[in-house]
Length: 174
Image 1 (cartoon, rainbow, N blue to C red):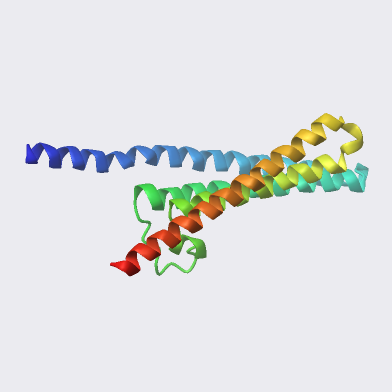
Image 2 (cartoon, rainbow, N blue to C red):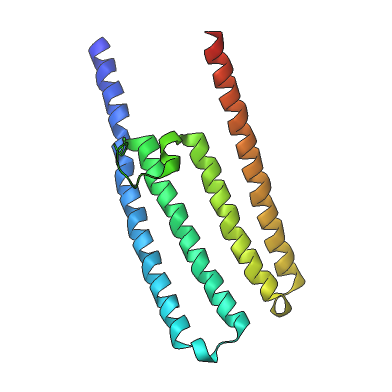
């Protein structure tokens, strides 16, 4: 029975590698965002003389939105792989992201929530710029959704802080 238990434990631990293709799929999705960014940038350059300042601002906000989503993807790909699959062994790499050295599931959730707030804020800014073309209901719902993201992120950060304090307290007592 002890041998069977060790085999089962090894199988369970090895199952983390089933996530590797998911991270590869996110890398492909990031490639799609790079393509989207380049298409939108080329449209901006082509139409530069015929666009109003507001139109240029909206296109640039769209480009920033794509970049922020790509940053979110990087956090999920690199942080998730490092946290849940395997170490990346980047300790001496000059390009290692600063946040990666202290990433864990709680930190990753808070970083992702913060990134989502940033993306939501870009969408909200685009909404405010186009407010005269939208109904009050659409604007209200976008503000409400943004506030839900903010409250959720604060709750996650507070929960992570409590959990960290509890872990530190437990370590100091032992």
